[in-house]
Structure formats: C-alpha cells, structure tokens
Length: 551
Image (cartoon, rainbow, N blue to C red):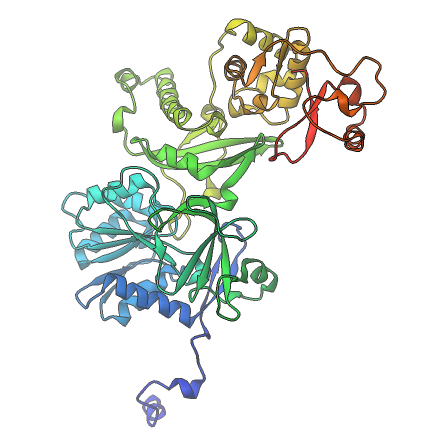
C-alpha cells in the first residue's frame, strides 16, 4: 500500500514557484516569557533564520570532520542553529540525552566519547560544567559559544584557563531577532571591565538610543534596538504587544523597515563593539536612588571566592524594599575565604563567626567599589543557583532571606558631638530601631528627619535632607555633615517674619520665583507655610521646587 502510494511522486523538492513560498513566510513560532513571565509566541521568518545560519558558517567554517553537540531543548531558539547549521554543512550532529544539558558530568563524558568539537553554553551552566572538567578532558573541543545571559569576565578567564585551546565567543540576541544579532571573540588578554557582546552580524543593524529614540554618544548608556533582516514578524495573536515592541525604523531607507526594542541597556565602545549593561527592568529605585543590579553583580563576581552572584530588589514586607545578594562559593579554600580560626571552629558559634567573616569580605569589597546605597543589606549563600529548563538562573525561585542573612552590627556608641545629637534625637522615634544599613525601609526616613530637624533647631545645624536618604548609618550621615555635604554652620536669620500671612518673592534669596509660583507651591502644601524658612530647587532630576527644612 505504502509503496504504491509513493510511486509517481516527485523525486526532487517542490520548487518555490509551485508552492509560492518566499523568504518572508514563517519559519517557526517559539514561545518565550522573557523578563515578563507572560508567554508570547515569537514569529520568525525564513529570511532571518537563513541569514543567521549563513553568517555562522562564514564566521566559524564548520566542516564534515566537526561534531556539534545538540543539547538545547527545541523549545529554545539556540537549538535552531544546533540542528540546521550542522546539517546544512555536512557535520556530525551529536544528540544529547533528554535533560542531559543540565548534567555537567554527563556533558563532559559525551564530549569526550563522541569527539565533540563545537558546543554552546548559557553562562550559568558553563560555571557548573567547568567545575567538572579535569585536566586533559574535552580535548576534542575547538569552539565554545556562550549566549543567553551576560558572560562575566571572571568566567571567561576561568574557561580560558581550564580549556586554553578552545576559542570562546560571546553572542547576544533575543528570540525576537532570529537567535543572535551580535558576536564577540573573547580576548584572553582582557583583565578588567565587562565582556562585550560585540558587533552586529551580517545584515543586522544595532542602535543604542535614548528615551526619545535618538542615538546616544559614544560611551553613553541607552536602550538596545535591533534592525535588519533578523527582526521577527512580531508576536502571534498579540497585535498590541507587537506594535509596542516592534516599531518603525527611522534610520533605514527600506520601506516598512522596523526595529525591535530589546529592553536591554548597552553602550558603544571606542572600538565599535557594544558593551551590555543589563536589563531595563533590572534597574530599580530604592530611597530615590536609581540602582543597576547588574553593576553590583559584576563587582561581586570580581572576588575569587565567588562563583556566581545574583542581586535582587525584594519587598518581602510592605514598604520595605531592600537589596539582597545571592552567591555561591567557588570552593571552600578559595582565596583565603576563611581564616585558620574559623576553619578550626566546629561549634555553632564558630560557624556563625565564619559566615559573618564571609559577608564582611563581600560587603567590604562592594563598599570600596560602589556607593553605600548600592551595597546589599542581606547576603544569601546557596549551594547552587536555581536554573530554568534552558539553564538560565531562575530569579523567581531564589528564596527570601532569613534573619541570618541580614547584615547586622554590634552596638557602637556615637562618636563626637554631631553623632551624639543625631542619636539622641533619633532614639525618640520608633523608626530608629529599623534605620541604618539597608534594613531601613524608605517609609521610616521621613519620621527620622522630623526628629533630626527638631534637634537641629537651636544647634546651628543645617544641610541637605537628601543626605539622610543616601546615608546607610549614623556614622555616614555624621561624616557627611563634617565633610561639608551637610554643614554645621551659623544659620542665617529667617527672612520670613513671625506672623507672616503671605510669602513674597523677596523673602527667598535662594531661588527666583514669581508671586503666582509661590502661591501655587503654598497651595499644594496646605498648612506648611508657617514653618517655611526658604524655598530652593532640588535640581533638574527632581523637576520641582520644595520647601527646605531647618535640618
């Protein structure tokens, strides 16, 4: 029956003229949740996929002697080039066992057994893989490709030390742009900075744009936009989301050209490569300070005892948002992570001391490299990072910190008259018990400012309220006062007399306002003008004027 059915059928592929197929027809739909957690089907066309495969062959020159390890689940787009690049060019396709991509020792064994020459890793899984590779193993490898997450410099260096004969490349691209759009061949001589994501591949245009979608200068951070043949058609049955993320490309002369808004941040380097700076949605604001979580992670990864680091902004109780750092150790003996006394201690007290020493080293390193408000208030040590099915860090599965993870300090008496005044006034406020370090919630700071303002009256203290939001403890706040950001000085006479019923422009030496503008401010802050001493601008970032306090 089957043989008779096959008789008379064409021996060759049906021509495109007969099928009507073009490069603009769909090649596949792959669902991705990205950073939103909401699955969406990305529609990629043949032209983008073929462009990606043709570029890769030109860049890497796969031959029939090569063996490519196919280990990525086919629901993720890296599997597209693992399958089709290999088969298009006559190389051998080595199929990993189901779930084998998550078993580092299995991967080491199959690479050696099958003579694999090309392999892909998400950086998180590369960490685990390298820990399983022993000297002399995986000798057949010649090419390793990384993508899917930021590749830390320390991981690049570790890979090149462990596998010195293997070329390591860092690729970048969202599912919305036919797998990858930039590439970078990792330089073993690089000793500082971030590993670039490189330059655009063939027929791809990369833009770094500001909020008005205008190009930013060299070295200035902006959002990454992708143009060219790799841009997907859009999201399946999601026209509103497609219109939001796939926008007109004003820099292209091609009719109907579009570009994809990645939500990623980057900047151009002088050599024409792009440096990845993290996700837009990994930027957070705590106590009014904009914080780039990836910058904290990069600084933690510099420490030799740290294998992996992830930083989140958590709000486990209402109004109390804090930075939490999660980390895994490279090994127990790395870089003097513990001193001899801690190593010898086997009591609960000794273990607690050792944990405190670990956290102290992490905090001290961050404090030396970053502003105080970017230093996490909790450090959670994990045996291993939770991973998603495709090997990326599963941030949603990271646990809430317990009391042991919080940064605490033994009591230290106030030092000097400034600290004594601040401490004495602060103790009368309930918020005092939760202020200091990042254990403070932003809601308690205004209450402390009120207490400090009252204490400042009559003590010739004046200064910038913003320092109270930026300082992490009493010593830092007092240091700011002595250092000049908050000044202990003679307070000028109040230009607004007692019993004043209307504030006039000449009463404010620090700012030029019309009577109408003053009346508008007073109206927006009902009941506040009797205690007003002056009005001054908070700067362009604030975009408004506000009353100044006697603090």
